[in-house]
Image 1 (cartoon, rainbow, N blue to C red):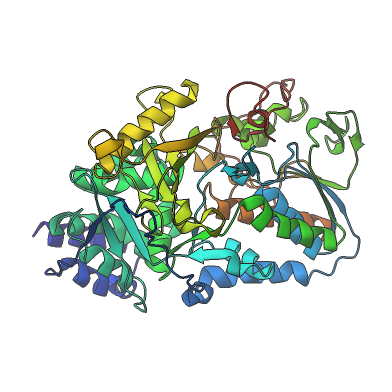
Image 2: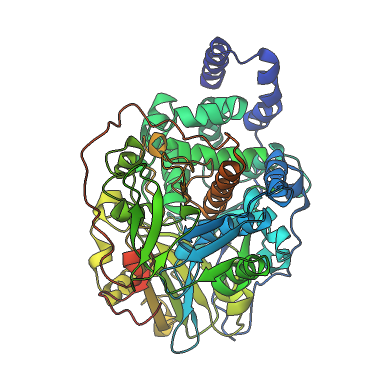
Amino acid sequence: NFFRIGLHRRFADMKRRGVTERSAMKILPLLLLFSASGRNAASAFSLRMASDGTATNRSARLPTPSRIKKTQNWREAADLSSKFRNEETQTKKKVAIIGGGLSGLACAKYLADAGHEPTVYEARGVLGGKVSAWQDEDGDWIETGLHIFFGAYPHMMNLFEELDIEKRLQWKEHRMTFAMQELPGQFTSFEFPPGVPAPFNMAAAILTNTKMLTLEEKVRMVPGLLPMLLEGQSFIDAQDELSVAEFMKKYGMPERINEEIFVAMGKALDFTDPDKLSMSVILTAMNRFINEADGSQTAFLDGNQPARLCQPMVDHITARGGRVLTGMPIASIEVHPADNSVTRLLLADGTAVEADCYVSAMPVDVLKRLIPARWSPLPYFRQLAELEGIPVLNLQLWFDRKLRSVDGLCFSRSPLLSVYADMSTCCAEHASDTRSMLELVFAPATEAVGADRNWLAADDAEIIDATLVELARLFPTELGPGVPGGGAQVVKSTVVRVPRSVYATTPGRNKFRPGQSSPIPNFFVAGDFAAQKYLGSMEGAVLSGKLAAEAVCDAAAGRKSGEVRVVHESIKAGNEREPVGIRGNHPIAFGGGQMKAGPNPGHP
């Protein structure tokens, strides 16, 4: 009865907003699936220690899911890529791109495709930005984060195809695996049946799992999610002002949905607790996963990002006349006194860089420190004060034996941990049948985003000890004092701190994201924080770089499509402020992650 009443209200509300009954009928098969009952084939299992050290759950490599390339989002991404290749460039422009992360490299790649001459200036000695990695003295790759590729990343998937490196993605079986908090050592999965179209495959995945939500709780999710399915992005954008908790209260969702699902999703998507997270983040992910049959299927890169992804981009750029330079930090952006246009960049070593166009592909927190005084009163740049990166920690733990682990991503549902993976099982570069290496995201990391303390300020040993306590609680038969001999032992560990990672998607932030075209005619902005529909993610970074390249091409050709995005009315012009500038020459100063504290971490 509560389902019928809630559904009736949802249809009535949507009809008032212009949604036709015919379009609403498209979702009826899904509703029927949700209202059905009787499937109890939950996939629950335990992770057990392989006593002989040889057992593995590593699966054979799967091909790229075929349906990824049949979605509307894929076609739109492919069309935009084609636009660059078919660009009839009359005058080749020299473009200086500040930042060699995914957005900067993507911008350079597509500008090179269009016949322009990009040069990337990366401050650090390693490319990748938030996906950077480096080798330690043992030759092990230390990573800034645990990076997972989704089927719902159309621009990233197009990029892999264009670079002819699709085989470097290790696709996993289509499932989402969660730890069972109330049943230590046990896990449960949402299994997506192969060959079943969207949205029925997700409906089946939800219904066949009976361990996390009751049928009643599943049904009570429908009234809140129904308008997302029917109205799409317009409804999602309208929820940006609401936190997850506020959205749940508005649509009558029980708290257990938050505890069972949204807490894990919030920490995985933006490293924060749901009460501090915009509901638009959750809805954006769910919309892609529900509407794209293979959207939630995941893949791991078969090795480190600098070599396996960034280097092919560099090779592509340089083969077409562009350049990618590392160890080139920017000291200041010099502007013309008459029209505020950029005249040159000054590097930290005093070198002057002159170009026709300039693109910032820096993190928002770094860009804010370099805004010239003459630009600072402009609302476009003042709105950046409303955006800041979110803190997170990335941990890697090497064990003295092999764990019988899942070949894929796991949601830990721990108070301290977000997601993790056994990279010795999931990634070819770390493959081992005798020892496991767990990579874990430690989040939230500070009180501001929901942690019980400032873990960024804790020393490495304290962070590792706290992590092992959580792992022992999650896996009591594998780790901890309850296991004979203490179970698996850590033989090596690393902690990488990222004080300012992807921008924090607290409620109401979306309206302050800048467009790729700025009020300065020869200055453009890229980065996952800039306006694009994929939020702070690898996909968002690539798309933003691509959109910035499009804006440069439009400006170079005299087209008007790269117009400045309207700044929200709450942002007013202000007084001039001198730029703070970049202080230091260590990774954190440039928005990256680093091991150890202080200015000399011992790595790029």
